[in-house]
Length: 153
Image (cartoon, rainbow, N blue to C red; front, top):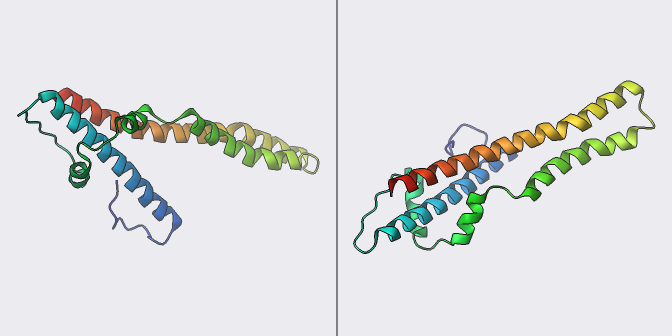
């Protein structure tokens, strides 16, 4: 992920949202890594030594969270997005496009009506594909780290 001095204007809402998302994803990754490192060490028994290769941005957070993570929360993080998020992702654009369509049926000429029907049919699907792809990339990254950790034990 980009650094704080990535050249993006920090005053914009997009930059602030990106930084907040980066911090959240980074914190979740660190929590998962701390949990997996602790689990790996527990399997080695007393006197066992485990080595984990992690990015420098995760080291301090892993140290703080080592042995303190909640296994249920880790399961939730690795489980993927809940179905309700996907439903909301489809419902919001559908309502945003469908409401003007429903209100404008009586007042619009035929060509804009057709365009609005097409937008109402296509936009939610396109938006859902974008959201699903973003989540898939994020969760595959976490799963790759998990697989790498499990493969080294």
